[in-house]
Image 1 (cartoon, rainbow, N blue to C red):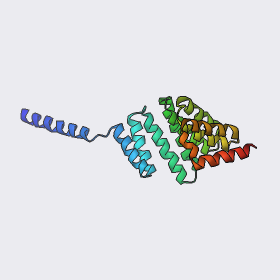
Image 2: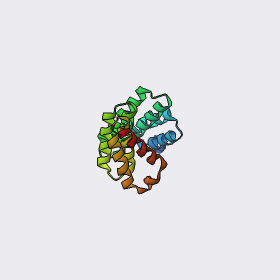
Image 3: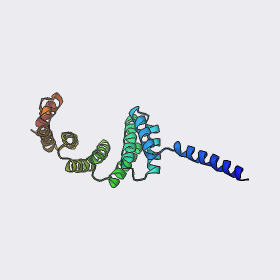
Image 4: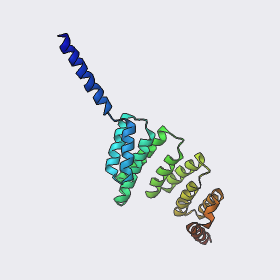
Length: 187
């Protein structure tokens, strides 16, 4: 009887440890989601990020990347509003978990801009710039939203601010064209 109990405990121990050896962590699912995101398999990426979030509901990066998967999926399906709204929801969750990451505001702002809600987009871009005022890219992104909302003077100011932060932008053809176009629209 003792021998059978011993064998049972040994086998149970192997089965128990074997199952833990193959259990995936939130980080594993997150990494798998990123791999799927990279190859544009958005549905599978969403599935992996969802599993990561189920295992760690405070995983702000998983919310953010799932939002990105929804956003990219929406772009494939001619701005699918349902996916865009899911992206906003996930970016908002990421912000609630980590309000100090400027990229989360930038990403959510991009979705608002895609939906034509320039007020909310600009608000998010302003917050991103407040958190990281030395990133010229944020000013260029905000300048596009300002331009699209008809605020040409502020758009031009943001382009000049981006050039101040990165003088190499001054020679960029697209930047120079944008400056010329904005000056024309201001007149």
